[in-house]
Image 1 (tube, rainbow, N blue to C red):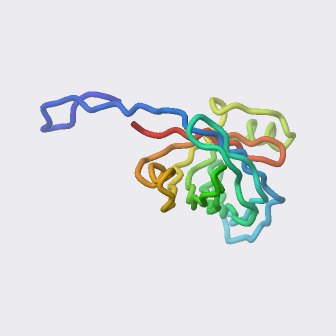
Image 2: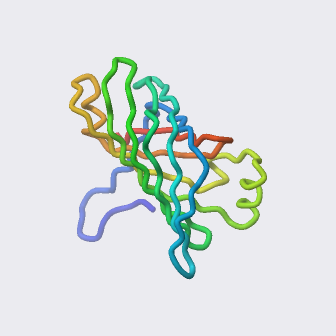
Length: 162
């Protein structure tokens, strides 16, 4: 989908993505809350994890969680947690997104088989907040995440949109 916008005289700019770090978020057992016909509400506690990459290193602080709503093949995600950078700065994370798996892929996931970001639509849009000068850039840019589940973890490769 490229080209020009109706009435615009210049082509649309395609965004560039730059890898900045990977989050390896440790998670506890899902807690099913329930909701109603056709959907299910649940919560997954965040129990820790790591942050590593060219632009940020640190840890995922235990105590956050991911509230999710499952509808058919698609799960809407709304996670909130904290990071502690290697210099001690605290960074708030709000990470929303979507996880979609057809029936065959869902069976593979339930069996614990590895899947790649290409096979599974698991995309997020993390928003970061901090007043730490060294990490202020996180609160001033847009990011996307490509995620994949691993036993006991969710791994999210985070890219800044340039």
